Amino acid sequence: MKKDIEWHKQCLRNRLRTISEKRDQLLRMETELERVTEGSGLYAKQIDLAIKEGKDGFDRDKYAVKRFDSNTGG
Image 1 (tube, helix red, strand yellow):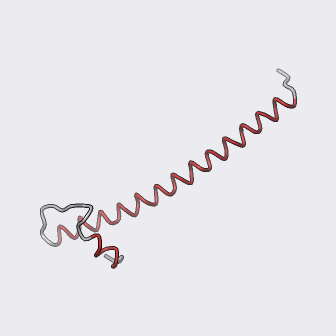
Image 2: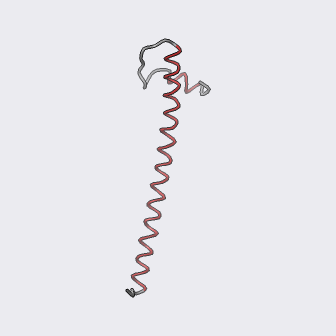
């Protein structure tokens, strides 16, 4: 079906807006992925250290957090 130029221009504006929104979503998702990846690395170090120290449990929010922040090598 034939559509007038204004209709096509509006469709293009909508498409460009959608592209921009999707780009923003992607950037937010990349940031979130980096955050959870880093957090998982710390979590793995906490578990390994707890096992090494013979612990039967730990508080994930507190255990060795400062130690790993100052010594990223683990």
